[in-house]
Length: 313
Ligand SMILES: CC(C)(COP(=O)(O)OP(=O)(O)OC[C@H]1O[C@@H](n2cnc3c(N)ncnc32)[C@H](O)[C@@H]1OP(=O)(O)O)[C@@H](O)C(=O)NCCC(=O)NCCS
Image (cartoon, rainbow, N blue to C red):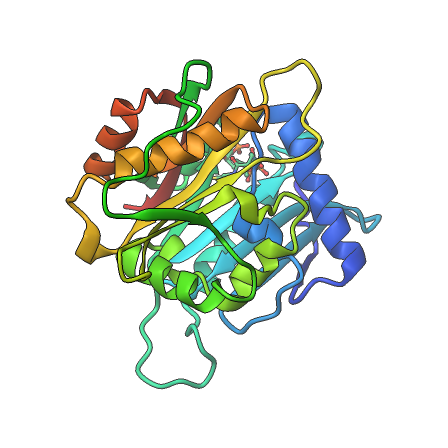
C-alpha cells in the first residue's frame, strides 16, 4: 500500500534548504541532469506570496521530494523532483497535485480580480521518467528550451566590436539599474529573463561564479547602453574535462535590434570564455525563438540537450 508522504509547505529554514540541495544533487547524480534550474535553486531562501515551497518527507523526516511553484509570471511555473531511491511511490503525483492547487491561488494574496494561472511544469533533460509521468497525468509539451553547444577552439581572440559602438565590462553598483532596465526591454516578452529585478541581479552578484569581467556592455556613440552579453563560468569544474562556459544571456535593446549586433557581441563573449580556459561554450534558447537559434547556429552552435515545459491538455 502506498502511504502519502507528509508535506511541509512554506518558506524553508536553512537546514531544509540544505536538504533540498542534497536531494537535487542526488537526483542529478542518478539522472545525469540537474532537476532544478538556477532560479529555483537561488530562491530556496526566498519568502514571497507568489512563491511556494513544498517538501515531502518520509516517516523519519528525511526530505524525499521537493516542489517549487512560481506564480509571479504569466503562467504558474513549477519544478519538482523526487529522490531517485523514492520514485514510483506516488510522491511525484502528490507534489504535482499540490502544484495544480497552488496555481489556482492569486499571485498576491488579497488582491482582487486575479485569475488562476495555467500551470506549466519543467522537465530538465525531458527524461523518460518525466515523460511517462507527465503523459500519465494528461500533460503534453508546450515549450522547448534548447541547450546549444560549440567547441571553443578556433574562435578569434580579439573580435572587432560592431562599428560605431564601444564594448566595456560591467561596473557593479554603477551599472546595476541601467542593466536591469535594458534587460527588461530586451526580454519584454520572455517569461523568466524579462522579470529579473535589481534584487535578482544582486543575488547573482553574490554567487561564486559572478565575474564582472565576463559581463560585456555595448554602448552607442552617446554612451547609452544598447546591448549586453553576460557569460558565466562555474568554478570548480573537473580538471582535464571539457570546461563549459555559458552564454548566460545576450540582450539587445529592441531599438537596436536588426543592426547585426548579435553576431559580433556573441564573438566578444566567446573570446572571453576561450581566454579564461573554457573548451566548450553552451547556451539555452527557446526552441521557437527562430532568430536567436539562427544567430547561434551561424556562430557554430549545435543542439546538445533539451528541457521541456509541460501543461495539462
Ligand atoms: C518525474 C518524477 C517527479 C516522478 O516522481 P515519482 O514520485 O516517481 O512519480 P509517481 O510515483 O507519482 O508516478 C506516477 C506515475 O507516473 C508514471 N511514471 C513515473 N515514473 C515513471 C517511469 N520511470 N517509467 C514509466 N512510468 C513512470 C507512472 O504512470 C506512475 O504511476 P505508477 O507508478 O502507478 O505506474 C521523478 O522521476 C523525478 O524526480 N525525476 C527527475 C525530475 C524531473 O524530471 N521532474 C520533472 C517532472 S515533469
